Structures are given as C-alpha cells and as structure tokens.
Amino acid sequence: MATPQQSNMTFFEHLEEMRGHLFRSAIVVLVVSVVLIFFKEFIFDTLLFGPLNTNFISYRLLCMLAPEFCIKEIPFELMNTELAGQFFIHLKAAFILGFIFSVPYIFWEIWKFISPALLPSEMSYARKLLGAGSVLFFIGVIFAYYMVIPLSILFFSTYTISDRIVNRFSIDNYFSFLSDTILWSGLSFELPIIVYFLAKLDILTVSFLQNYRRHLYVFIFVLAAAITPSPDILSQVMVAIPLLLLFEVSIIVAQRVQKGKELNND
Image 1 (cartoon, one colour):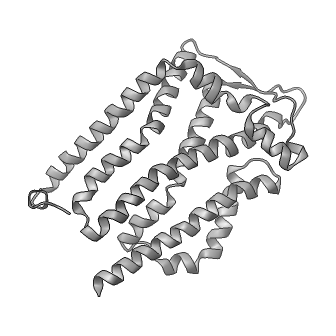
Image 2 (tube, one colour):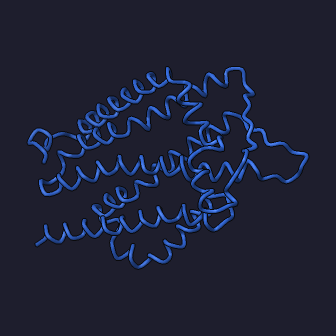
Image 3 (cartoon, one colour):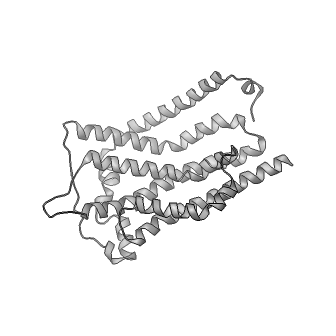
C-alpha cells in the first residue's frame, strides 16, 4: 500500500523512481554477463551447441516416441565469415544469457516499483503472480531449448531443394535463431501475467476469453504449426499442448481478478 509520501509523488518523480529500478536491473544484467564471459566452453560447447549433438536428450526422447526421430547424424556445419565474428558472438551470447539468468531480479525490481500502489488485499496475490512470472519465463526458455529448437534443427538441417546445395550455416545466423526462439518462447509463457494486468485494467474480460475459446484454440494450433517447421502432426501437438495449458491458466487468472473486483464492490 502506498505511503503518504509515495501518494504525493508527481508523475516525474515516479519516472525517476522507475529509472532507478531500470538502472539497478541493467547493472545486474551487466555484472552477470561479464561473469559469464569467462565460461566460454560451457556457454558454447555445452549450451548453444548442445542441440547439434545426436545424443542430445531431446533426440533420444523423441526417438522413443517415434522411429522417424531416430537419427545417426545431423548434417549441420557452422562457419564464421567475419573477422571479429566469433568475438562479438561471444559477447552477445554472454549478454543474452546474462539477461535470462537475471530475470528473477528484474521481476523483483518490478515488484518493488508496483507494490506501493497495490491494496493490502492485492499484495499477496500480486507477489505470487510476479514470482510465477519468473518461473513461467524459465519454463518457456526450457521449452524452446529442449523442444522447439531441436525440432527446427532436425527439419532445416535435412531440408534440401537440390543435391547441388550443401547446408552450411553462419554462426551469427545460428545464434540469432537460438536467441530469438528462446526469448520469444520465454515471453510467450508470460501470457497469464499479461492477462492478469489486462483484466485488472478491464481491457480483457473472462467472457471474451470464454466466448472466443474455439477461435483462440485454432489460432494456437496455427501458431504451433508456424513455430514448428516440421510437418508431422506429433511435433505440432507437442508444441501446442503447453500453449493450450497457458491459455486455460490465463482464463483462471482472469476469473480470479473478476471475482476480486466483485468482492471489493460488495
């Protein structure tokens, strides 16, 4: 709940306070990124290049589900075409991972910024929700790393339009694909958190989500098909299921928000 001093703050004073939270978050991301620079072998050989190994756990699990996923080799060659390419990829990888590992602290700074404006009845629920935000982000990252990325690598590394063409991918292109997929997946798993704030602002209602559930289900399956380049149904269903669960959780979150508003009005 806001203190008298915080309630009397002007718009620019709120902006100044927000700048402080953003600055501390940026410092933490920078510090973590600098530390990660010294773990080059772990970042690249273990993490970033892990999905290129045939013994990667995702391929072994997929092989148990369907024989067509059993592979002996991945025809995937990486090359560097720029003089300082590997140096800058090293820095970018450290920064992206630094941001990912700093997400819990960033959510904590968000909590410190918004908590003074919350009612006592909202404090506990909002605290749990922001805590869940960190967990959901990491689940999205793990989902992309162990599901979406391996399926994409399997498809694109073996797809060819002519025997005259050899697939050789630049390290910059490969890293951009990894970072974009992981970050967008992490952000997409924040759907329940986004729905919470939209419901609080009366921008999104439970009735809208329920009335358009079928349409949104179709959209989710189309999105899963777009995320998963592989044409087989099994891959698309495996990607769609977590997104459908997130949608249903979002409906529950919106219902909780609506119920809370009704109790406050009474």
